[in-house]
Image (cartoon, rainbow, N blue to C red; front, side, top):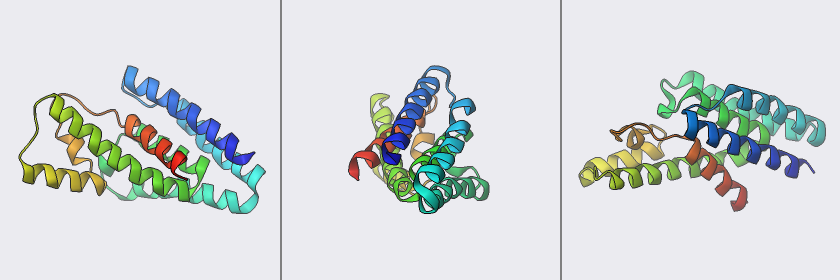
Length: 166
């Protein structure tokens, strides 16, 4: 029951965040902040202390990273709160897989946009940008000269990959 409920909430959150990010360029707080609280409460009430711990650590990891790492991966604050909500809903184990998949999806999407815009850099610059993006610096997305990559897209893809992975 807990897994189904948290998964349904996460998918609804991702869908709403995708819509607002693609349409308005923002991930809205009135979706993400209640989802953090709902994830913590749902895990605590239905899963007991072990689930509450996983939920707290999942949300806390993103919060600590956001507060300690300057300009965390060039990701906006709404995207960070979206990741925090995913961590609160699904726990730290899920979040670890989702973050890795998100970084890889972000790199692939940014590369696809560069190719589409015929702005592919030389091989050394591209290799460095892919490495730095996977390490959490978002350099490949920063190389896009015509706007930004709405990061809710790789977050949603990475979360869905983590969902179907395990």
